[in-house]
Length: 193
Image 1: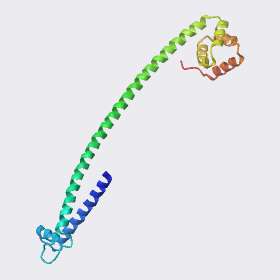
Image 2 (image 1 turned 30 degrees about the horizontal axis):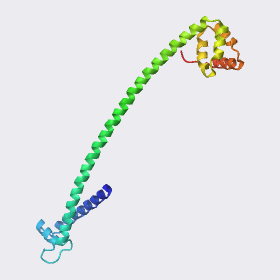
Image 3 (image 1 turned 45 degrees about the horizontal axis):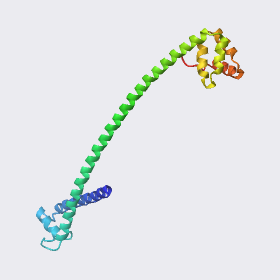
Image 4 (image 1 turned 30 degrees about the vertical axis):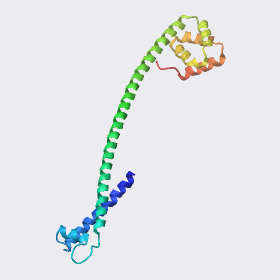
């Protein structure tokens, strides 16, 4: 509907522009000398003949159409203002959401740092615990830990004294797991200290 109104306004605007050019030409060619003669020419009351342009009833229809278009133009301008207000509101809400996301990301990073600290403390406790055990006992416990937790075992082994870590690794019952852990130790697949 708005596109149709805008198109109609464009057509009327162009028509008015052409009419203005026509008026300029009438004055430039001395066909008319003042605005009263122009009005007489358009209404057909100019001495010397009928108007080629508009009759009185047609002029009334055009004026009514112009009034209607002016009202519709006002409505469109109000709609545009309302849309601009809504657009600004949406931009403000978007910025608020972006700020909220940034704050939550910052909190999440702080939480992640806390989690890393807690993990490091627990890992340090486990290293102390396994370092105090006999290697065969530590190996027996590692045998019971699921393979998904190999990373934790690697982290513990790399923090133990090399001789103790070798004895624990040697004490594991599963030969494939020994080989896999040894290979991962060789490749350095441990968490950063």
